[in-house]
Each structure stands twice: as structure tokens, then as C-alpha cells.
Length: 97
Image 1 (cartoon, rainbow, N blue to C red):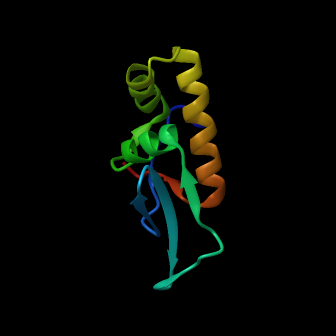
Image 2 (cartoon, rainbow, N blue to C red):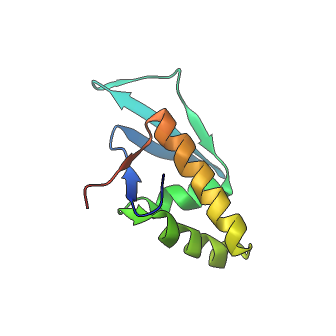
Image 3 (cartoon, rainbow, N blue to C red):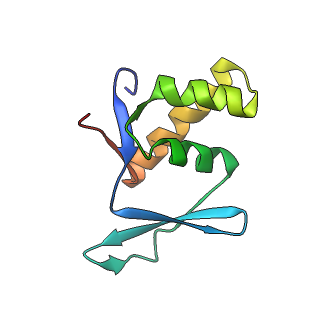
């Protein structure tokens, strides 16, 4: 499902760093929806930052593999799970690029 596609942040969400945490806040019709806040762990924060530009699963997982020194398989699994969950929640969208 994710292979061969590029993904990016949905501009209807903003990220705020509070201490070591990053929180995604959905913005809809200029009103903050406080019922749908997402707190990202360190891996999620890294992937979210990679999605500032349209990126593929392969690109992000390679960077995750290097940054966190995890196996390539684990990096792919973590990236895929994060993107799938964020797509489901509307935080990440398929890029036109």
C-alpha cells in the first residue's frame, strides 16, 4: 500500500514541542480540535520531521535505520506502522509530488 508513493504532512495539523514531547494538534476551520491530540515518541518525531518534504517509505526508513541504528527490517516496519496510523488519523496524506 505504501510502496511507490510519497507522503507528506497534512497542513491541517501543526506540531508543538513541549519539553521532550511533540504534540500534533489538528486545526480545522481555524478552530483547534482538542479531542484529537497526538503525542509522538522519539521515533514518531523523527519520521514527522522527515515528512516536512514529500518522502517515500523507503527514503524515511533508510534514514531511520541510520539515525536509530536499528535493522533495515525494523526501520521499514516502524515507518510503515507510523505512516499507516497517521494516514488513518488524517495527519499524513499522499503527496502529489
